[in-house]
Length: 272
Image (cartoon, rainbow, N blue to C red; front, side, top):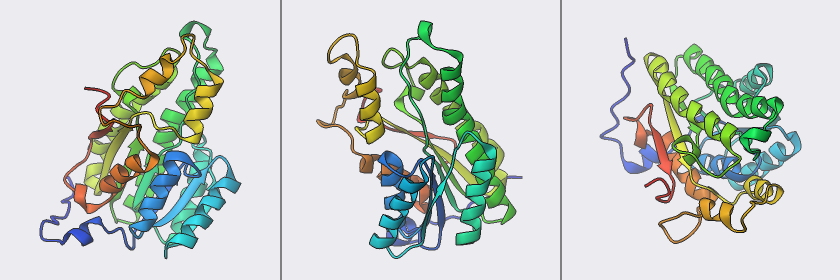
């Protein structure tokens, strides 16, 4: 039997948007999209644990949140490809905050290597982080949410690469993100009886620290080719991290309570 999700139709807008009292985890949250997401969730009132492969950057981001907003924030080391590391971070959130209501699977890698030159270990790394990492995070989040009988929402950061092919060299990345779209649907089916919603958000290219470093490390064979793919926008500008963070905030809040299993395109019209 599927759990009955609350009907919030009579709630005022401010209450629907508020995350006061909720507890969130953001993976890969020390910079870029993850940090922007963590900041918006904190602004809306959520306590936030930032998990990141770089523990020092994670704590620095948490310290910034604590200084800017009246919420609790914690930064911890987290390798999403390892289930023990994910379990430890989830336990830290549950212990420090008293539970988990929102889990954002944001951590990802995107090495650019042509198919014919892709070594096995590169393929394995991409799927370990981008796909198994989402599985590890979602499973652990659902265990905590179900164990506390509190429900919640899991948000997977997909990509427009989860809808179509993209720049040459990203076969593993595209495959991993298509997989996450499928997992989002299946987890929504399995977690609905537990009162847990699962949504995906698929951003267009955003010039974050990681994206720009990757672009510099793998220059295209034709000048301007990669950037043309990355900037195919109908809104007259490139996306910012906060553009994506606001969509995640919508998914995290009661504004989206009717939604589960969907992947929202935050793509500036790129996939039209």
